[in-house]
Image (cartoon, rainbow over all chains, first blue to last red; front, side, top):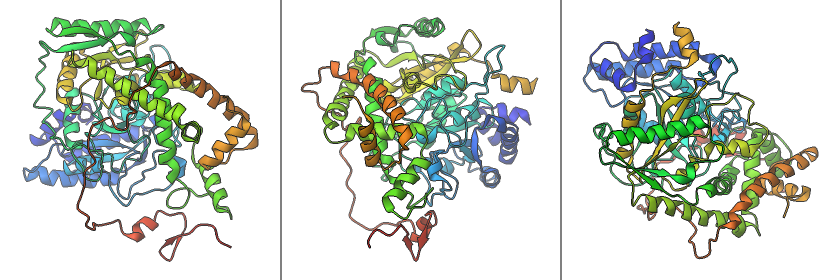
Length: 494
Length: 95
């Protein structure tokens, strides 16, 4: 049975079509894997009985020859997605017990294509974090460990439970959301593929909002082809999200041909940081060599406002979060701290229900939006955002994709970078700029650090040009031939 | 313009988050560190730059003004910490 959990989504679908195994068998294998992996704390709510029922329904459709794109494929769903009647709390205490009476559009799309939900994946509270250490349900443990070191490592964040679940082979794929790097960075830390689509490509309806001008849904998978397949199922116009864009969703899988001859690959000078680990610099250079050897053209580009992306992000995102999270008041859902006075009830509920990082960001957001500071901070940041986006527009006149590292380090130990919020924010230095510009990005596992941890390379594409970006990503995946497995998995297999 | 204790309390009030008295100094330090770090944006000349309001250039779609299906009231109230007679219940606000 263990072999079933080593499949990709693509090979599992082929196996289901060929009747080599049933959807029920595939789901049971993943439930067993998930039960055995509870110590990693990737799922905050298990829906195994629901999974079995959906797998049986998938088997019926497969028997009738009506299998859809993801028929019978077991997935982990980030707890940020509203799923009807099922625990959806964004891993915050303030949403205790929330079971939405509606379904997010993206998960609805996945169920329409036959996917099976294994459970709700752990995450940083309200997606605010880069290490999955702010969840009300506790830390997620990365299935990878440094060579000769047993210290538990973070899986990255905020989609840390999603990434770790896929890396530990307890789900064939997972949904994540990416506001400033929350899909790409954990994918890099866990040695898997993570795709953030263009802003507007996937509906945000039913995603618990963090920063509405940045949030975007996307898949985490063990292959680029799987990411292409999942994106096709997740994407599409939705009248319920006014920022959803009405453009056709191409067949991303069909567009994969591995040919990058003539592709113009931009390498931004500003991403070469002082003090960046040599191994990341080396891997990045190796990435450009792979493309060059396959006939792609490497183009030096400049994105001059790169260094301002993170501070801009830390005005825009908290501002939007302070507004979005105003709805948690102890009246309509979740936690309530009783008080005879309404305002005190609000204040006590929010003090108790939000964790330290969320409170910090609400406070920052409230401050930058408050009277007298709006122009100096928020308006200024919105102008910077125009300049950051313009940098990319100029670069994309000369290149088709941009190649960078995904993160400035490999996974770090739980407890590190905890004292200084800004040190934690710097994790997203390579992922935030594209978020600010709404561009699609993908992280592909491309090599190992000196102590045996996965490192990712990131490709960025032009708006709604995920197909070309995915094709370049698949080339990168083939060239890198990343086959290393996390310690947690190899020890169990051994 | 450092954030002092009084400012922390004012922001907390605006944000409707109760802050314990002994936590204000620590919060002020944290917020000041973050604001000092974002202060570097002031070195960029943004005169004449349009603020970004949306990353994708789309006009907001219009729809016909017709009633659609809403989530049933009882389903929404089922998630409330306190509901009674078809309403959300809050502490008394009018004497």
